[in-house]
Image (cartoon, rainbow, N blue to C red; front, side, top):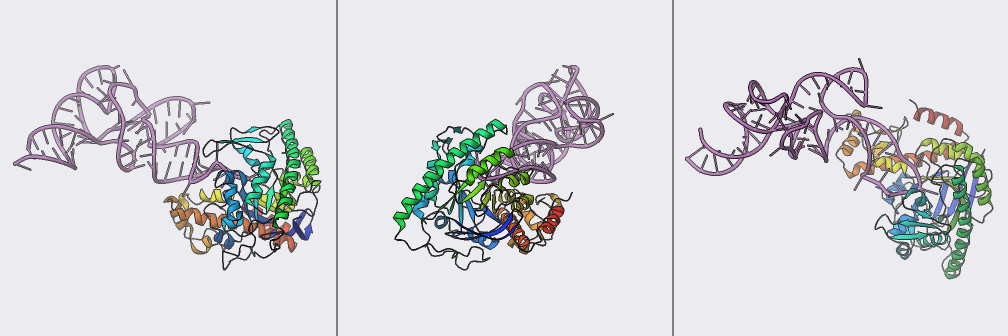
Length: 402
RNA sequence: GCUGGAGUCGUCUAGUGGCAAUGACAAGAGACUGUAAAUCUCUCGCGCUUCGCGCUUCGUAGGUUCGAGUCCUACCUCCAGCA
């Protein structure tokens, strides 16, 4: 069972630590979205320096390239990517929702590879097998997001997600048993060694004691859309399963999220971590998520927006490509101590973007990723010292001013 | 100087009688939430009451025509070849 310690509670919110085979995650925490085993535009060293604690990769994308067998051969996701810290994989369930030409049946989902058009089917069982080969510390159950927001469609997708969850659990346990018996001669897994939260790591290449860890964990995924009765039903269903934590999926905006989480989180067992899938582009997502009982978050927004020139500041997002920054020689964000803000000014960033230099995307990604990771850390600190409400009000009032 | 070719939005460019005029780039702005996203969308002669209307435009000046960026004449500029 995945170890999760809670240091402090405040209403639904909690401050804790998740102990994975590849190190600890101090929660609440923002997990870097590394779909293809890389946080776009950033090296793993940069991610460490930013203060990232964990990354989340995507099963669908990784089985297409480079293939789950290859990642297993490399020693697992952490070894392969050089991250050497805690890792998650998303199941591929999101692709049922986001890709066109997806055919869903009770057995699973038939996709068409966006790379070469090759058809293949992903099932709860195959997703578990893929994820075990990829070898992240924490796996997501294979779920289905409804394509429409109608109640009947949402209910149907949720119920299928539940049936798939049972199959995921069975398959996960089956693989886990096989791996334990095969790995019994390996050195015991040491937790807390990969000090992933240290701001600078002296040696990026740590010893390979975690190669192909046999300890891998499964999160169930709560669905139900905007319907609170469905959310409650889904949470109840997932709560009883022998899983290590919970993903909360199918959330697209902070609107109504507090109510939804206030329905879901009290039903979920308190001693297991909860991951809010795909949320964290907006600061309010992290505040509302953490306040209402979510421990980890992931989102592609910060890095995607960074590549497109949309950068966080305490006064809201700015588009650094706008002409008004041409002669602005101030740091992007005065209060930020990321590499970008410490060493460069807005006029320079503007110039890099206007001339389409690669470094523009690198520096912007460093800043945006640092911003959300640091924000989650600040939320953690505020929860610990009891200043969360003040911090939240102050931060949001300034950020969403105008 | 002669002969041939060319001058169209900031730049390059399409255009061979119905055209405020094609495409690209540049420029201006917007979007982005478990990443088919270093992507996508909009604006881009001027003005207005902006799903429309008016005005002014294709080197310059005339002309032919119901109508000219497109045809004719002259001139200006540039390019190539010959002197």
